[in-house]
Length: 251
Length: 195
Figure (cartoon, rainbow over the protein chains, first blue to last red):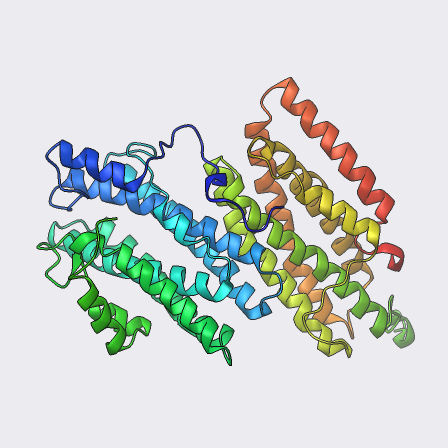
């Protein structure tokens, strides 16, 4: 099997429609909609949930590739990544059901591969920093906000299911922090590159200022500072993220 | 009342070193299969199959881990995999090599019609022969793996049945099963000459 695989090798059934993230945002703007679903209505929550579903799918595929692409990594690293594959597969199953609960279906909205591209770093330390700390950190923000909105609706089905997913994501961030340190022990240059990669992902997913500090129903994506702290991000890292949310390019 | 036969109760199949060798072979198969399933997820279009592979990666990893942890208890280095032969490596290469989008049928056939059923057979035979007085640690791992592998095969068969829904597709399954079965047989299986 090829190792690693090219971005465009990601296999999908015909019901999925793939589109560039930038193009999706443009199309939404042309229709008078915010660039990404804001979770202000059941319909926009459904669209957000569809986006999360394909993100979880790509996370499962990415973790799987990490297991395959790095056979010489420490065995415990492989075990953590294999566990993550299973976790992500459950998350896909959760979000397929939540999508159906909201009256939607798989393939209802376009899929972007922006997350998958981030999961294709060629160095294991960079990949784990980018995916487990950058993207799973983003997932902590998004899920904490979704839980809060679901509790207010109230929709206990969404709130409880996503809370279990969030618990897993916190574990994945912790794994990422551990392996970023372990894999770069004695190699500050490798660590610098991995952290830079993670920060480039953080910047990209600030989405032109859409991720910022604020109440769940007031900002498109709220930085979940308490959850991030619980996941092991330092105050310095959280402050850096908050600062960068104020100067991010769109996509 | 029948007389006990203490010596008979202590009759065993393989010695410590040979068991360690066999465990390294099992670990090779489980680890290689686990990595293969994990790598295939991104290359497999069908969502139910992706999820099937995703669920089983972790259990295969646990099998490899259990075998790897058993090794130091048998005076061997921990977490070491060792293929039984070059022929078995070629068999695994062939199984893994069906990575094109349109080859999900072949991927499922290799895993659920050939390799996993073979592991079930070998583990079952080993369990039947492993001494119950001094080999319970190995027997416990075999029992755990057997339970999982049987369930994996049943789940894989359901996925295969859903995809192999025409005579042409069933023909593809039969041809690939026969080809891989031949390679596995030439390799002497995962246990090799130890069985």
